[in-house]
Amino acid sequence: MNTTPELQLALDYVRLPSAIAMALRVQEYVDVIEIGTPLIKAAGIASVAAIREVCPHKRVLADMKTPDVGALEAAMAFDAGADIMTVIAGASIDTVREALAVARERSGKTVMVELTGVRDLDRIAPEWKTIGVTDLVFHREWDAEIHGKSWTDDLLREIRGLIEMGFNVTVTGGITPGIIPFFKSVPVTRFIAGRAIHATDDPVASARALREAIADVFGRP
Image 1 (cartoon, rainbow, N blue to C red):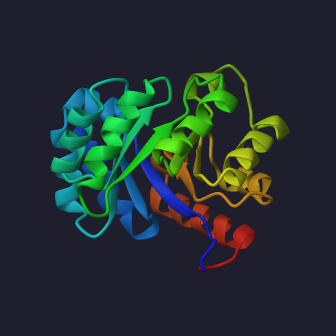
Image 2: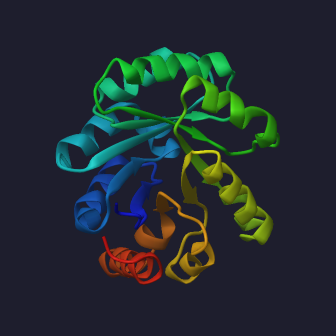
Image 3: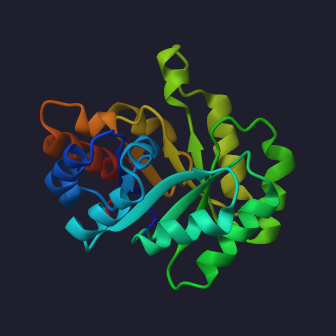
């Protein structure tokens, strides 16, 4: 069984042409291409369809961060070509359930719960497990990074606890080659990198370096 974490590219753009160009440049080195929430807000659900068209052999994630109307937004994402969509952790359990129901009707589709801002994981995580959630995104928020907050052992313990509950956990927030060894003790499913790839002078080399860092720490697939 392959336990090497995957690499996901976050296209946190507000202009679709720039996002398409970046996806085409680095797709060889990533497993999943994410249409970030800012891009979906700026360019609409058509941004998901556009990335699906130019990267037909990659899994595509629509980072909807759905807060309500779970069934409708899941259908929108999947109809546009997404393989995965996200529901925000603050959404009601009914919203998560409705999104999951749509995913189950369609082969190979996944709903992930995005943990941005959640403060009661001990209470809510067992509920997600009960209704069939399998995948979580553990997110150290962009704004938290701006204010100097970094990855800590406490956060690592939270990630380990979620994995021990049986969730697949994807990690995002300031992911660089240098931070990958910090996660060596936990079987993370996927790392998400955005600016560490697309905001560098050589995005292809940066994506390759991240992939190599993951392989060096967790082994090669």
